[in-house]
Length: 228
Image 1 (tube, helix red, strand yellow):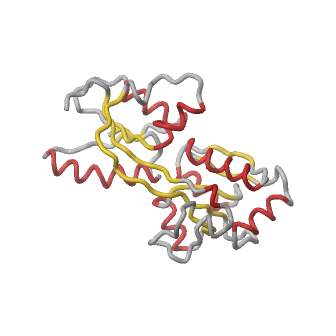
Image 2 (cartoon, rainbow, N blue to C red):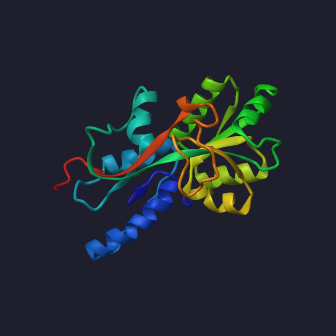
């Protein structure tokens, strides 16, 4: 099972949870192999060119399957032509987080802070979906957060904790421990409603920015030609 992001990220966490159940059903082990980099293009191309024998699968999230075709003029794979969709694993919203030392406690305060420091504030991103969501935030709020790319959510988290970046829009799983320990602060969930796991966290609509609601998905794919 190929994962296009580093260990410890949301895709990796979901893949490892999924692998255990798939292994039980198949009666044989399922090996997770991380191939991070290039917005998951490396992983997607690897699986697209793998033998269609059912032994190589792709964790196909929003980035490589829907965002990359929209932002790259040429890709070494086609999400439609080169893959057989097996199953939707789930959908989930993103959250907006900052370093807790930052003097902001709300999205409105973050916007004011950023506008007072144009091009001096930074956002971390480890996927095309995170980057597009952050640029949408820039567009809708008039801020100028500068993009700093990372290969994995673990690297993003380290950058957040150390204060190398100002904010990040990320998925929940890899941030849960840091949120509970207080080493990062969440300001909003990018969904129409509050998340049941974090009922005290405002939705982005409550923060006055309903146009920045972003939901991403995770699916399981095989190379085209793989038999049913």
